[in-house]
Amino acid sequence: YRDVLVVYPEHVPSLNNAAWLSRKMDTEGALELSRQALALRPRDPYVLDTLGNIEMLAGELPAALEHLQLAAQLAPADYQIQLHLAALLVRMDKNEEARALLETIVSSAGDSEHAREARGLLAELQ
Image: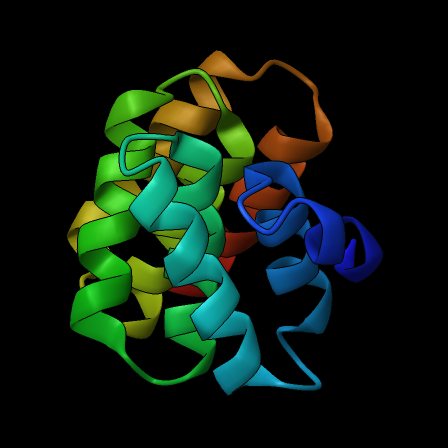
């Protein structure tokens, strides 16, 4: 992705993917890439999700909450984004909000991996 960015520095999928892949090794650099992607596509739920997850990793929880809530609102059927928001809510001790969201995922996602992950998080809240 970095090679693509040399030629096309505003290629949002490459910015977003490079940010996601480097988030654990270079959190600050990943934040920068993700914020560049957000500046180009401020209402893209996948860009918002990536930024929110990296902000959560960096301990920037209020900003992460803002971005993940918007991502979840823009992509209500994307259970991965919903799970990311639920995990952040748990981390922020917003357990009732997390529980409600996780129960929605369980009831909507059938027998998917997302539903199993939501059940696991619900069990941790018990």
